[in-house]
Image 1 (cartoon, helix red, strand yellow):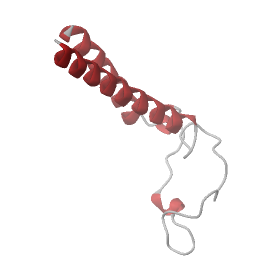
Image 2 (cartoon, one colour):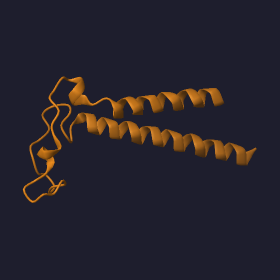
Image 3 (spheres, one colour):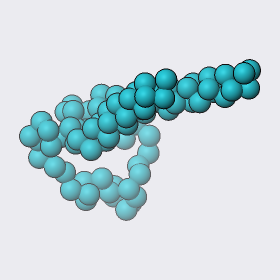
Image 4 (cartoon, helix red, strand yellow):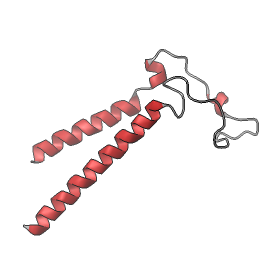
Length: 94
């Protein structure tokens, strides 16, 4: 039981690490953008909602890669919470 949990946890952590470490723009061979592009005319880094163009490339902000990373993280955390609560209930019952 503990080995299976360790295996699933390590696979989940590896998937999250790969999703976070691999930059989709670099993997696709696209040019990296500088930080100056993200600063608007007022000098703010975070602009108003819905500002800027829609994502066109995998490395663009708000693209599928960002949503996939979020989904993987939510799924991994949900799995861990489920396993911990299940183990707590088993220990309390027995």
